[in-house]
Amino acid sequence: MKRKKWILMLTLCTSLVLGTVVTSVAATGPAPAQPMAQECGNCGQMRLLNQYQYGQWVYMGTTICEKRPGRLDEEYKRPVFVSVKCGNCGFTADLTTIWEKKVVCNH
Ligand SMILES: [Zn+2]
Ligand SMILES: [Zn+2]
Image 1 (cartoon, rainbow, N blue to C red):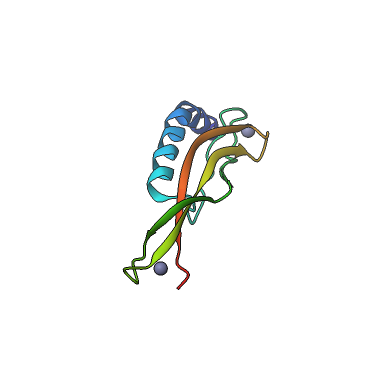
Image 2: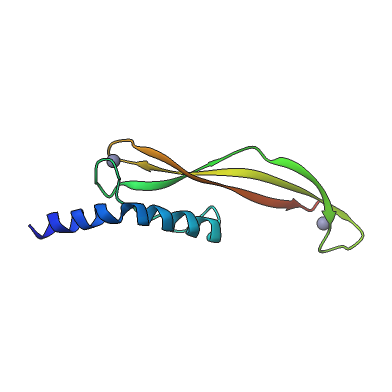
């Protein structure tokens, strides 16, 4: 009996939970150490997990090297598509796209 009530409460909070995920992903980057299971809005099980799909690195141009001023490094970025997937019913939803940046230093 207690458990049923708890699930109902979680259902009511689902949209709020999804909203929180978007902000925390944008703030902390694409690789949280411990993914937290969330409740699926479709089947109601706690099997909703974040998924990250990485696009191709895109060459952005050169940037001044931080270690050796006067030299140039190459800058790249790639899109990271963030979505959630339910491990129980397969329900998926896109959350957001974030851009990851890297600098290649070859000297
Ligand atoms: Zn589900
Ligand atoms: Zn460099």
